[in-house]
Length: 189
Image (cartoon, rainbow, N blue to C red; front, side, top):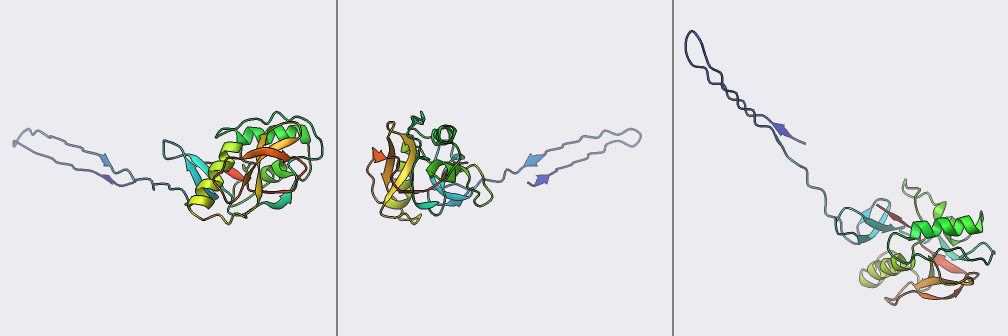
């Protein structure tokens, strides 16, 4: 930030004088860089930017698992049914609350520490679709496999939504929670 001052003194008269003081302080705002889909930012690769242009979602640059189940073996309803942007983190928390400790999709995302960030989560159905479509289908970045990836959105007591890594089709909710699918964590910025 640069601050400039323009000071001007005018002195008049011999015995008495008048001082006119003009202080013009101008702060030059540094323009923030424009964020774009595909940029590396906030620990990952940007795949969604909101209308403000300052907030959005990033994907981890690599998979967190090449094959893991959605659940921890307990076939119960988790109420992780959020589908929209911004619901993946809450879904992840609901899954972990219902399933407890262990090695499964939501928990490995929640436990992830990557590029200095600890707030990763399993993406919701809409977040997963956006991530794979924007990064892999449109831009061919992110090193996604031609395989299925879990979302955090539960479809039923026995099924959850998954997204195929190489297409633009919406997620399918017909995959059993005990199936071994890939996982890619996301975080908000």
